[in-house]
Length: 241
Image (cartoon, rainbow, N blue to C red):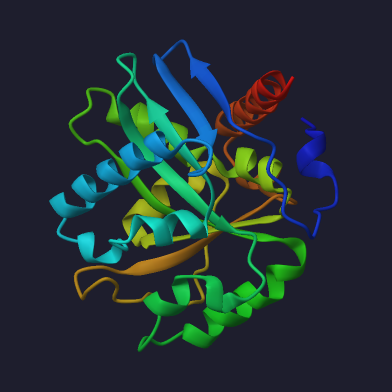
C-alpha cells in the first residue's frame, strides 16, 4: 500500500496544515488535530484531563504546571472526543526539533546510564525531522478506554503527514510503549532504561520511522493510520476553503 505523503522525502522545515477532525462511526469517537492557539478551550480541556490522569498515578510532577509554557512548546495536539463532546484522551507533539536539548528525554535520562546515547540518537535524526509525542493520557473511567488508546496510538502517520518529518519519538514506561508497537513504534533496546519519574518506572525511548513504518506496523493498524491521515488532510482542506 502506498501513501504519497509518507513515501516522499522528508522536508527539513516545519509544516502544519490546520485544524482537522475525523469521526469513527464504529466507536463513536472523533479524533481532532489542532493547536493550542487555534483551540485554546480544547487545549485547556486536554490539560485538565492530563493532570487528572497523571495525578491518579501519582506522577503529576512530570507535568509542567505552567500551561503557557507547555502551549509554546506544542506544535500540535490530538484529542479524542466522545459522543457527548467530552475529551476522553489526548497527546501532544513537540518539534520539529533543531537540537537534542529540546527533548525532555535529556531530562529524563539525567543521572541515568545511556543519556549520551539518547542525545546521539536524536541529533543523528534531526536532519530528517524529529517530532516528539508527549503527555499522552486516556480517561480510564471511560467505557471504551481501549478504543481511545488505540486512536491515540495511531497518530504517528497523521503527525508525520502534518509536520512533514521522518521521525516520531516518544518516551514512556516500558509496558506502555509495548502497546504501541502495533503502530510501528520500535523501542531502542540498546539504550538502558531511565528510572523516571522515580524508581518505580522503567522509562524507555521509542521511534517511528516513516521509511519503514509500512513494514513495522501491523497491517490493520497501518491501514487505519493511513485512513486517519487522509481524512484529516481532507478535513483541513475543507476548513481552509
